[in-house]
Image (cartoon, rainbow, N blue to C red; front, side, top):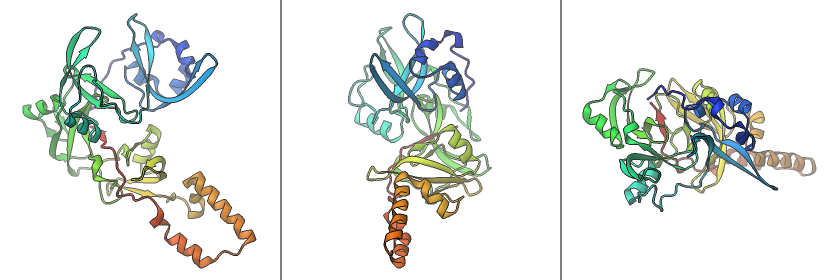
Length: 337
């Protein structure tokens, strides 16, 4: 659900000196197209590399940024660093997570109900929904009174009961929606506190089946648990081949490859080699380790006789040694409605 957001901050309110201390500047933020979400009160969509200088010590980290007003009324920069996993074992603004709460947050990214959170500044309890920032694993709360539920989703007009379900933070399964291509599809929708809108929910426990027959009415923003950057997604939805890193198999080992979206079939294809290039051109781009292996192989050819038959068998069995794609766990990902 797209909403029109007014600007919450003005550029002249921002303490640019504090941003310069983080290795950022107004010019760099504008070049990275990050100014608009910041001034509207949102977190940056992309993770930003930061450099913190504290005396003689220098620390580097990646984080999403947002602008907030402190107690003195000054506009300051908030850093949302990347966490290994959401912290669900301690109270969150006075709320203790139940077993069901934890399962929902880990499986869907949304807790699935409205709870009262304690505001220490006002000493009041505020009905809110809770979600997980899928890029940083930070817990995010959003006031229930601010939630905006659309009247219609992909051609389906919501009745009062369906709107109430979403207003209470619960998931809602809708049948007979119409995609941009005019094809009917069914999906679960739910309000996301971090994104502040109703999103599509995809089951992260169904495995990595983007390239195993699963179809999409439009290009997904996430592949095997890895969310695409704006630049990657812009190319991806146009049908261009995109190189993606940081994928993780079921053994927690990282791998990388190339993905392409076919708008006609609605399928996402994955390949370890760039399908838009010849095999010889694509192999060095797979990883630095592969490049080193290739170079070492060429050196060995100059001093040793390599059995061509064995090399052919290794080449044919390469797919058997790659990570098991079907068993790779994936995060449940929502897509903007």
